[in-house]
Image (tube, rainbow over all chains, first blue to last red; front, top):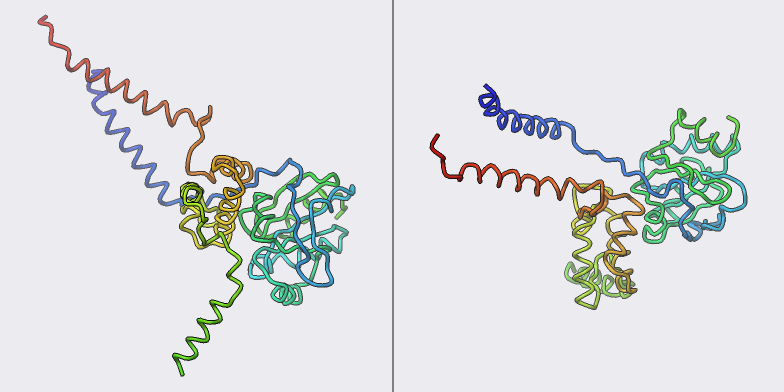
Length: 176
Length: 132
């Protein structure tokens, strides 16, 4: 009796394997790659001014006791344009938003900010993705919450929406 | 006319400031370090296109990673130092080469266990039948 049951075991195992393949094929692996820098001090980075009239940003800007949002974005990125109005509202609510633009140019940035508004106090142009990699950022847009001592508290992946606003504002100490 | 404009375009390309090397696409002068760099690039996952290594990806961020890898190897870092740095930023998932640690032990132990179990089964089969 016991032996008969054992004969079926390989068949059951292989069926389970194929069922796993089938489920895996139906649900492609869209991995969200979270940064391992959350909870750690900001990496050393310097992103020079992306456009005239607005300062760039570097690690040393984040140790003055004021928590900030640091938005990694690009003028060519469609969801970044979509989150523009939300970032503007957060700025109006009293949050300081800095930006790091990746793979961008001053001209394209000026056009982008002209269209979508400019919520940024500082905008640094990332040199060869160095800052983006140092933050463990895998794409745009991403928004990091940085506390007043220069530690990364939180990473928001993807465009910031109105639903995310109260949470992010609370993290930078702004009453919504 | 067409040939002339082509020539002008070619001259412009040659004259463009490509003299500053861009390590995202250009090899290192040292063949040993270049081989190390390529081996590392083949085993780092592109975080944008995910299924591909950064050596075969057209994503901007993959190019940035290739440039960073060549620059750091040229500056004297070892490939495993650079891999560890990337894992520190993006997690284990960024590397196609699994680390040996507690969490990944099944990867090594399961094949070993299967071999031992299979060997035991085969040895039972091969044992001379004892007449009962």
